[in-house]
Image (cartoon, rainbow over all chains, first blue to last red; front, side):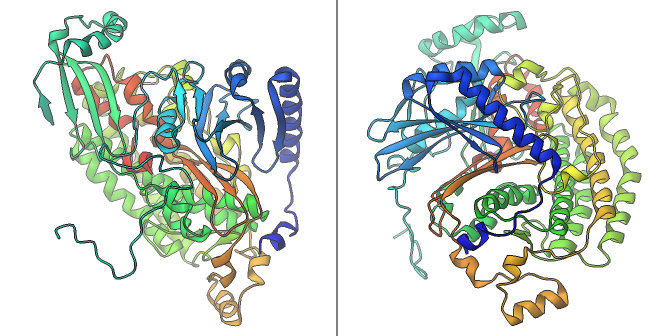
Length: 185
Length: 417
């Protein structure tokens, strides 16, 4: 199914969309110039209208400051993606802008963290909108945001036991069909 | 509302002192003994399923800490253990009455992964249902807002009038609230023949009601006194905190995903984005009413411009068995072909965003080529707006808390997901 649909007839792209893609490419090359040596790679995701920027953990804050200065002023989503096989947790941050020229695009900032001890500098001084999301990333993936003033659980209940439920190796306990939970027994 | 009358420890007061200094200009004194911690919720009938911890000095709130997560449904984790199709009903459960934009967002991300685009008629049908749910969601929000203010007529009217739009959605999709109408490559069924007339009747009725709504709610002197100059969110702060939806537009920032990054049929339809500059609770209520008017325009325009043709992508229609084909041709209903049970989008990732009733929702889907998503990340508007409790509420009187809470249209299940 998947391979069939990928080769399907391309839908008509309107003139406006083509212009937007052109602007996206321009923005990507501009970012490449400005960020320069800070980043590993910059790729353009035309389907999602987003620019993927991969940075090293030590350069995360610098890259964030530059992006903020360019007008990407708020965080839409901050989360981890667990890659168990390679021992890496990827920190994925979707950043957007409210400005007219930039609001069409998103920047996705990515950093690879060590799965055994994931640590990253906190971004709340640059993007205050990431405050609650960093708390969620901590409770789900165990990513410690160094410098976060209030790193505690956000969504999980206080009595919850077990570590890092967002990671891939955290199994959900399921009941078989017909099995009834009887806590009174 | 329970009151913890014990005064808090000296250490905690020291922690607070920094914020107290910031609050001094608002008339808050530094006498720590007078601070009282109040716990609002989680079983408060108005607050929904969340707890708000506030520290008050007299009746002025010094600090506010939203404690969310009481209706946390772990949808991100659940979806990683289910096939792609089974996440469609999952994403619409949390955001009651605002379900279609959420399914549109999820399906858009999935369609980007699969590389298909729905036919134009399906896009228009999706747009119409999304706008119907937007109106219903705003009426619901305004109803709850009214009861927060002790204005029970607004509550009754809101819930009464939303029934119209719920019923219209029922005619289109076959369900009142959780429709699962949007599927990869199209929609589940075509609109019935009587639908455009019924929509027109309902819209005319509601337009006639709108002046009464203004008289009863927005121009009501009591409501105005409670809302004007309360909970002012300045433009810069709104941008910094990443606020979204009508709350953002009430602070003077013209940002709407339907304009910023058009999806479905929005780039072909005629509508405006209402913006207010005041940033107070009254402006947030006003923007919601203006948005209802714009949604009415969108629905009319979409029905007028509705293209003909298929409601499902030909590649999926090709996989129908003879019975499915018969059902599709006779009653224009789409049955899932068996291939959907083992749908495997190619390896990769996609991000989609939509403007839901309460603001922007973002869907980030990572596929590893297996029948289940590798990672699904979903941020909802209420989740992003939750930060407002911490930064907007301090400095106000306790009696203003319900007004601010209601005005930001915060919906706990949607925030917790």
